[in-house]
Image 1 (cartoon, one colour):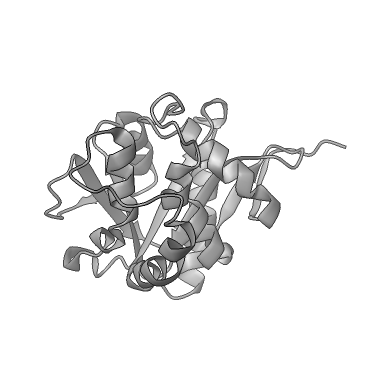
Image 2 (tube, rainbow, N blue to C red):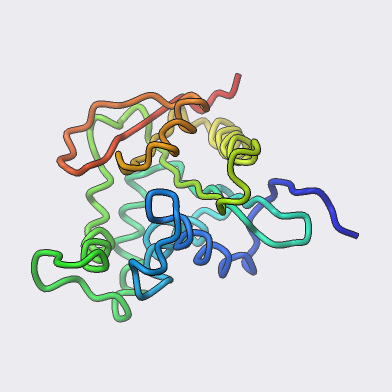
Length: 207
């Protein structure tokens, strides 16, 4: 029997879907498979490590047939996540993804530079928003209320852990995503990052 689409907790057998969803939504919300030859790279930075460290903060949108078609991942404590990323995650994947030897010259090298500098995630301006998250939905599942459902599920979990605020970092070019974040209560935070990004934050309380 096919069930209706629903948000559920992440399962280990969803990992392949995290890789797939991440690369298919990574280019300003669209498919990035032509941009990054290694289709696992982006999820190795922005999705899978969260599911490994804090699976209780990883949720997927199930299409009703057991397939994950969207996800939200997060960490309750960015500083702790960065420490774990440096000490545990990088040694596991560093042989496959070595750090660039010079200034990044390709999109892949730019991502490898981010991979090897997890400390970039720590900003004193974000102290009131210690958690952070990443959320992605395959295009055909966007605009139907599922992103809000995923977001609220994570916010409720963070709030239950006593986390006061959560933030995210996003590309300025992804205007459609910015509109979604505005609708679900995120507001711009002042962070002196020179990159073409916005930092957005909100309380974990869902009203």
